[in-house]
Length: 138
Image (cartoon, rainbow, N blue to C red; front, side, top):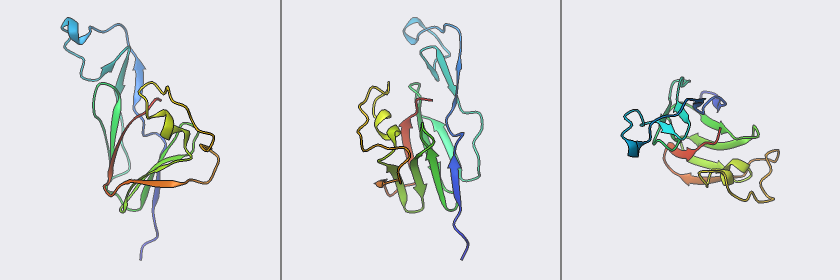
């Protein structure tokens, strides 16, 4: 039996670079596929093997798929475990403030007192699959 492998997706989020004014879609702009407001979201590197991250839409929604060995942990805004993907499914840590902040596109959400980034994770199963989508505010 091989030892369990655990990967942390610390640098998982895309790099958001400020850019100059861009033409709006309604005004006939042609380079708008990944432009949100005054930011362009780009995924510049994905590792390790077995990890796939894609930009789903121009709103900054990410899709992560994990097919590697062991578990992959996505780190939240306060360096806490936020999401977990392994061979049994996808999970969110209900103690992670990111769970609540990411429910709204602009992070305009109340974070309950039970959300404690320094607390022991409480994992809630989201699906049996190996992919998850969310809007990351970094």
